[in-house]
Amino acid sequence: MNTELTRKYNVPGPRYTSYPTVPYWDENGITVKDWKSTLNNSFLGSYADGISLYIHLPFCESMCTFCGCHKQITKRHDVEDPYIKTTLKEWQLYLDVLPLTPQIRQIHLGGGTPTFFSPSNLERLISGILDQAELCDDYEFSFEGHPNNTTQEHLQTLYNLGFRRVSYGVQDYNPEVQFAINRIQPFENVKRVQEWSREIGYTSINHDLVFGLPHQSLGSIKHTIEKTNELRPDRIAFYSYAHVPWIKGNGQRGFNEDDLPRADEKRALYELGKQMFFDHDYREIGMDHFALPSDSLFEAMTIKELNRNFMGYTAGSTKVLIGLGMSAISDSWYSFAQNEKKLKDYQSRVEEGKLPIFRGHLLTDEDLLQRENILNMMCRFQTEYLGDQYLFEEIRENLQELEEDGLVEIVGRRITLTEEGIPFVRNVCMAFDRMLQRSKPEKKLFSQTV
Image (cartoon, rainbow, N blue to C red; front, side):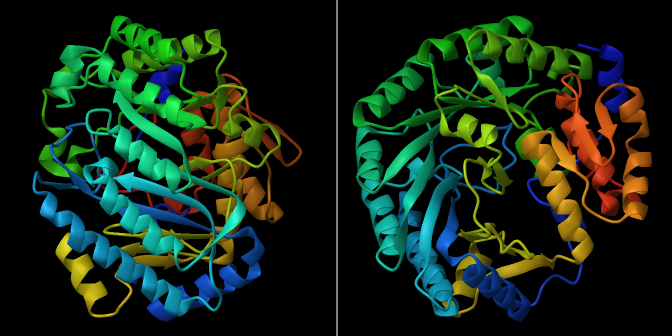
């Protein structure tokens, strides 16, 4: 680990689940007419490829202080029924817009806590969606499960509906860390739900781990990864904790900031974890992800079909991603549209018979160009630069220091991350981000890149 480079490049930067990034979307938003138009163009132009659905289920029974998701904290489960009814009504609004019966390739249930919902309500939700759609032959359904409340009935119900992938939020096994982030879940709980998942027949199990949390040390990360390897999940997401309390408010103030690892300490946690994953035969996939060679995510990277969108890294891609639920983001490739972020606003808009969009962005030709390059860097660590010579020279100038520091190699128009440069992929992508280069934010918008 090069501590000097870590300090040099530890700056605020986007995570690039989209380009342009949300803070740089057109301040005038997108008209519903333009959103429908680009949606239908992509839908018809890639009909055989199918569509992806992201369904946001926002409820949690308690607040995890590390979390940056849009959620609603409640112990009242009578919120489930009206939310499902609204989500299915929103789906019907999209069915009224789409010119043909949709073919679904991917469904992902995120949150919040999807397993906050009862198995019967999840079945009602998914069945209500599938009743009015067709499935691609190689469809893939996944969901996020909380180890403390995911039951055998949850797992069996979703398996019967076609789900074969599940992701468990583990974060860290150290009791002091768990207390600080208000996420108390013993190893035994994770072990139990993973064993149930294997017995039922799930073919891909992911564990989410986070480095940079309060009170984490090299010892605690080592312990967490050793325990993780005992269970041998197919995939591991090793996320950098995004400390953005100026955006998320008191939810990320559940501990003293002095308890957080410093930048060089945080990078050391990552480097230790990465080496341990390699020692246990995991392969690096894009940014922050690792998978066994037998997993479809590794295969997708090998054959250059790895994709990244608002659902994270996926083994396949669709031009159309429809987000259902409060705060969910949709992507037609040519435009983005985000739903209302407040539950009451979301529900009232849908009840009025309107798509609940409150902001979005219509991509320009330049946006599409830079999006392709950034996607290549995030998924393949390399891009054959697309664009005219003037733009290429500008990007190359932005990359000059990174090249001098040995983090990228540039041969002709091919830009490649070096092995040492992979942990700095966000910094490299920032060199392509013409919106960010033109207008540096005057206030904090992003988490640190390291």
